[in-house]
Amino acid sequence: MPKALSGYGLGIGLLTLSGLLLNYGGLETASTNQFNLFIVLLKTYTPLLTPVSSLLGLPVIGGSQVYGILPLMIWVGVACIVGVVTRGLGGGAKAMFLAASTILILWIASLFLSAPAWPDYLSWLSAANNMATDLVSRPIDLALILTLPTASSALTGELMQLIQSKMVKRARVEEDAYFF
Image 1 (cartoon, helix red, strand yellow):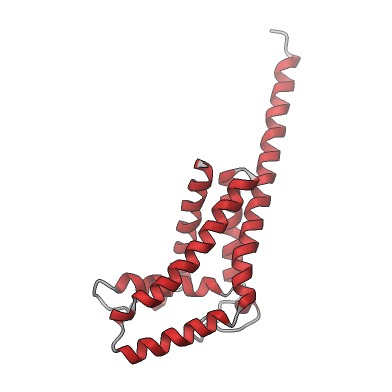
Image 2 (tube, rainbow, N blue to C red):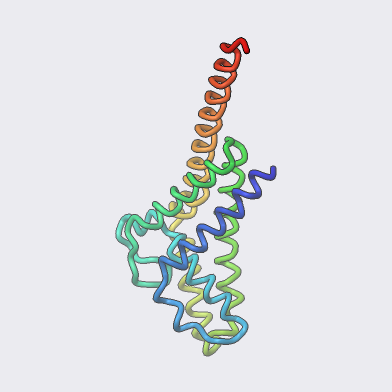
């Protein structure tokens, strides 16, 4: 379980950092009040929620920017790193499923908790409605961000566990070959 928790923390951290770097130019329009965090989280996680749509050339949720293959590469790359860290089938799968679910929940929460930072209620309501409709209208993206990283992390973790066990077995054979 400790490996799964460390993998979860690493996954959330890497996904958040990747989202921040992906949306680097979009944060200067956020207000300077206490609700700024929710707008930053919303803008950070938005490009990561539509990897298949971005791959097909569709814009991100609520925007006009297209990132291409980058969101998909980020999900798979982070999943592989988490799999290497957890070195196990179950730990890697748990960590990445929990990280993907947390990203989705944080995005939804940020969409609603950023309401006070918008200029007026009508603009927030319109944006929230459009973004929620965009998210729900892309079920393949939602299914993919919950399954592909989980499977990638689990497979990488299992592969690392097999490699580690073979190395340990080889070291034991070499130790037994020496008589002194």
